[in-house]
Image (cartoon, rainbow, N blue to C red):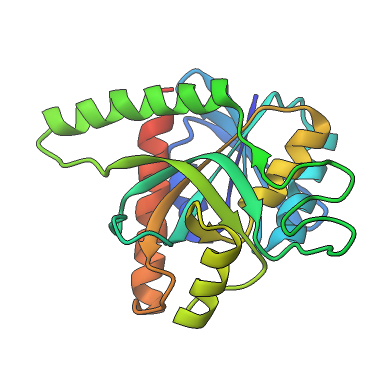
Length: 235
């Protein structure tokens, strides 16, 4: 069983529409949809925004369901100029760019874990990348242009990064990060501590500069959910 988390209601709605059958359960103020995408059993839930909320959603789901792997999906702001809106980023590691416990620990180092970046599961990420490849091939055969997939680091923090000053600060702390969001590394830490495979797939919605209107962001969130659903159908 896979726990599939997303940070926008629009993404969740798109994903839920692809469940062959599902039933709803509630706990800890959250809603969980239990169903299947193809032959894969999934638990689908809105993580809520921010690190604490996403970690709490994850921990509650793990205490309640026999989860074997977790995939986080949703939109993110680009930190590199070569990334285009609609591109996908598959994490190989995730930083908490706003975690700074100096002088006791180095910036971004998670206290007591000895890690400055939380690794994504290589096997799970490779499986997700293979599914993307099959989906992209099907999209091309149907006459559609699939988004480009990038592999690399993702930065997570409890801020919406929407101006050049904030964007530059994140880039200074995590210069290797391709994009920035608000939940991925927190869920990665929960998975690391529970010993569960974790993958994070993000769609670029902007360049962390808030040039898009909220309506455009919501539309891209729906597109992100539809894209993830397409990939998961080729799982």
